[in-house]
Length: 249
Image 1 (cartoon, rainbow, N blue to C red):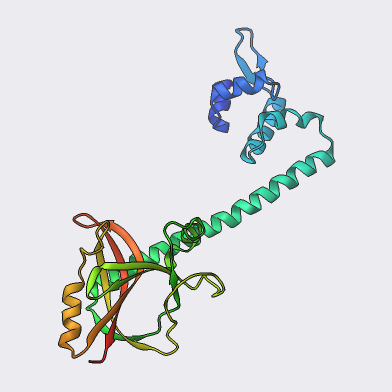
Image 2: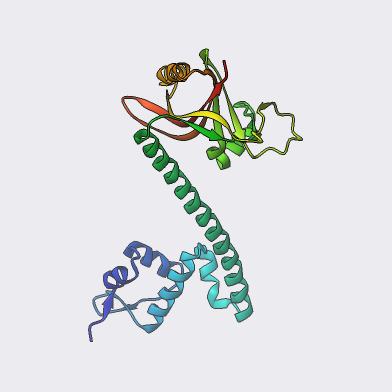
């Protein structure tokens, strides 16, 4: 029967040969030696490496693994339970990451949908929107978790006059300025795909939409843009799901 040399073991366990030599040096495993001084693995080596591979996947240190041979069953149980708790936390984090990916994909799909659709009059109810302060670390930390709740609010008479707000995450007891009162009933809005330059918000596609609203017999009010995505399109652009107030003359 062919003896498994260190390079064979390296391929089987997907562990670099240099790491195997290091594990042997640290006493984690032991290789037999041939007459030509080649390392080869017996059943004890294989079992050692199964344990090493398992515990390394649990992010156990080399020092921790080296102590395994001196641990009682209860000590091993404690180590495994600690690792289980860590893995469970990682699973929760990974599930949240998957949810975030899906939500981001939905926003890109909505952008594509709005590109195909014609701007139109809709009845909609926008949420409360509270002031967002770029210089407040607490607000920044909220934005990290709730970017999907970010709105831009633009004055129809001056695109340089704009501000940012966050919806649905403040309790009303904080010292925040309310930028938009929640619509208790659906209101008239002109729904558009709002596109702005990434750095200069005044460079946007609002002019024709505002003209359309006037041609329909209304006055354009504030523009509310719910963040969708930033992407390259003849320069980096910001895309928003835009809602323009349609006011009676």
